[in-house]
Image (cartoon, rainbow, N blue to C red; front, top):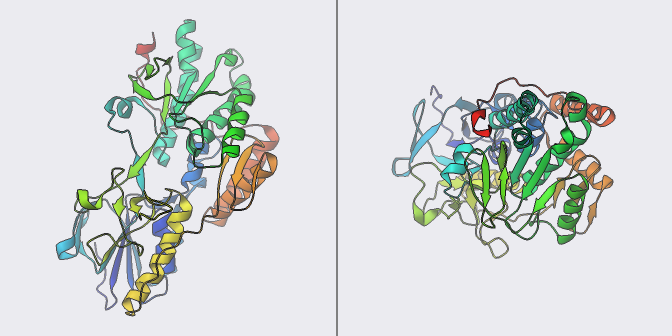
Length: 429
């Protein structure tokens, strides 16, 4: 790996997401050697992936080079690699570029899509947890409309213009709202020779309400917004299978759809060596104590989505969102400095700053600690918050200009099939 030897203790961070970057920043200019390892050389602002999928933004506007984020920090190193195994007994890890020792190890590996063991959905469904996956989805959406123009079969055309989104959380709700806006304002202009009124957007939720982590008022208002946009919401409906053509549910409801998007669950991204059942939850999160120490390991920590800190208020761990990840990263950074100074550690206390979701143009829901509001003001708040947390002035400016342009022109410029997504359309004939 060509990492210089140092008298400073070596801290290895696996993962350049919200948690890993926050920790690295907290350790800047401290007397430690920091090595961050990630399979990508960029940090992704995941809350806006759905806008890449729907042509609202290009991927480089929500990604930022990890080296550039931390370029001015002394004793910081980044390596592009996959970590394959951790050997806690020897304080080493095995990666795709070699073996390296550590004094302290921090898992910030984030989460991945949870298909709950359904291999068929995993094979044929589309997901949206990374930039490449978002680009695949964007290509598929556009390719389906191009295919719809080529067929005289009305049944096949309807299937190509039918969208099924599974999961009524923020990702599913925001994606459904964006697709509804595209149907309303963009498709009639792009495809004047196609009856885009027949486009169907279906949002399926297994529970009795969408946005179940938010207040009931926010859930109901989001549902009202989506229905006004023409989205069909199916609650208390569990999807059983998708064979690439037919979506089957436990209530015998069936959809024929060429676009099936799975946004129904996530699980921790574990690494071999720290995947024992006694420290791993059912959702593959790593059990940690109040200091984010992995149970049974004094010098291994886990933060962000991968960490399950069981507390009375959060028996299954904190929400798998950006705020808990960033706060845990900052707290752990302070604790590692305390640990090296042989001072007592500070337990993590999550400060819930609220949650929000956008449901299309001028429509959003926001739940803060003391205030809950919906509509256009909530949409402005959502816009400001997401701009503020983007990394890099250039990214903020690009996203802001894109949003202003899209708002004024009611357009989405990034409707480009850059990397075609291979799909067998013969099954819809």
